[in-house]
Length: 217
Image 1 (cartoon, rainbow, N blue to C red):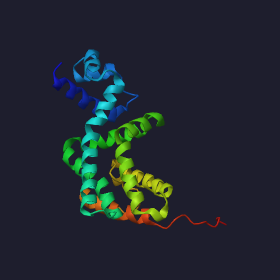
Image 2: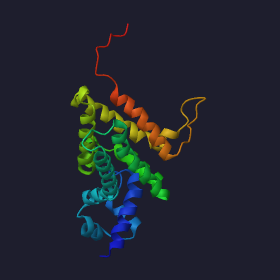
Image 3: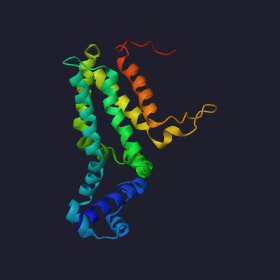
Image 4: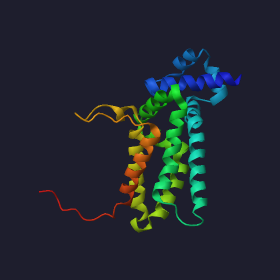
């Protein structure tokens, strides 16, 4: 079967998963929308799970490649020293901002897809994230832990989780909703928003180690 059928299935799957979620999209509806049949899905992907994996792999492969390349480049320029936290974060965040900019007409769709996936069963989300982003996230976590050894590996790991959650929301459609009366969103472009986010996250990551808190009265 021609590769354009595979690409069509991937495009339609992105659109339907973004609109209805993974669990809410049947292969029958998907193939009908794509103008093909179940045999094409099995030929190219083996199963619905294989198709889901391919949808995420298509975007994740390039993103992971760019993130790791940026990290390798800044580490090489440090000549054995540990890169600053800001540079490590920039290597992780900037490629995603660039990718969203390059997606143009499909940008909003990809953002919705990410939000839809986060609403799936936790086991489904964990499996997808681990499979497609786990190795890259682990590589960046190791870099951050080397940059802040005084905080301990577990605390840095927990703060990196906070950073990932903040990053996801910052480039979501809901971030720009006018939810604070009198303080509408600034409308900053992706590159500027990424730099502001890097400054914010670096400060949080570098905060002093845990200290006992006095219970509220």
